Each structure stands twice: as C-alpha cells, then as structure tokens.
Image (spheres, rainbow, N blue to C red):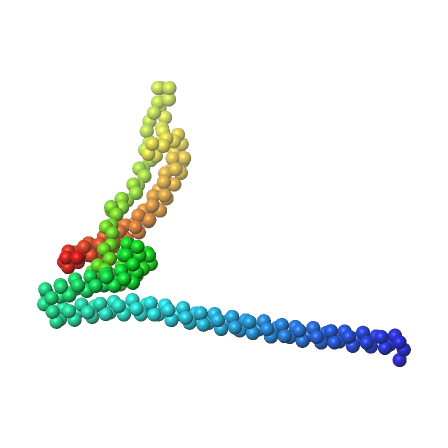
Length: 223
C-alpha cells in the first residue's frame, strides 16, 4: 500500500467517524425534541384538566348556592310564620351583606366581576334577595325615526317653467334615481339602528323588571 492509499484510508476513516458522530448528534437532538414535545403535551393536558376542574367548581358553586337558597326559602316557608319568615329573611340578607363586605371590602369598591357574581340575572335569586341594590334603569330607549318617504313637489323654473323636484327629508334632488339611492341608504341605516334598538330595549325591559322586583323585596324586608 502506498503513501497515497494510506492517506486516503485515514481520510475516509475520519469522514466515517464524523458522519457517525453527526448521526449520533442528530439522533440525540431528535430524542431531546421528542421529549420536549411530549412534556409540552403533558403540560397542555394538565393545564386543560385544571381549567376544567376550576370551571366545574365555579359552576357547581353557583348552582349549589342557588339550590341552597331555594332550600333555605322553602324550609323557612314550611316552618315559620309570615312574621318570623320576614324577620329571618331580613336578618339573613343583612348578615350576607356584612360577610361580602368583610370578604371584598366596601360594596361600592367591589370589582365589576365580583359584583356581577352576586347579581347575575341567571341565578334567579339575585333580584329577589337584594345583597346589592342595583342601579335604577336608564330612561326607556326611544326607537329611531323611520325616514320619510320621497316627496315630489312642483316648482317653477324662472317662475315660468314647471318641473319636478324630489325631497328626502330636507335633502333636495333634481333626479328621482338620486333621491331613491339616498332614500335606500337611509332605510338601510334605519334597519341597522332598529336591530340595535330592539336588542337594547329587550335588555332594558328585563333589567327594569329585575329592578322593580328587587325594590319590592327591599320594601318588603324594610332594608
């Protein structure tokens, strides 16, 4: 074997070692990435499980509290006279308010999320049992006015030549198609405003009923 052959063998052997080392490194890197992905997936699953447990906890607390309040009310109605029941309900609300204040500070300074948790309309008991006195509703929302129909008037050009002029409200058009285009745009805007108004008005009616119910309870219990 000559010097050149020996040198070639050494170079090939070195390249083989480098290739083997690179392959081992790539395999180790792949294993590391696979392990990281697996750990991330486990963490994601664990986080989802924790989130679900918390969600069920809050749902359970809300539903459980509602059931407890209804049971408390039915028991009181069964066992107590009207005067005793009224006194029990009143004192219970007073002590509940005190507890909330001790847990959360002054009622006026409560965070919105905390306040909502105690007055959420979905619980049903919130309006009847005034832990917080809700604000009076705003004035009844007024429906948007529908645009007036296109009005065509006859005017005299130079006081001599009669011609038609089209009005949409106070807007004046010499061509009917322009008046219709403007009128259609107003009608489309009015439809959107009406959709928004009806939605808001329905919420206003529900809130007004809830407020009146709570005010009646406050008067009933002399709170």
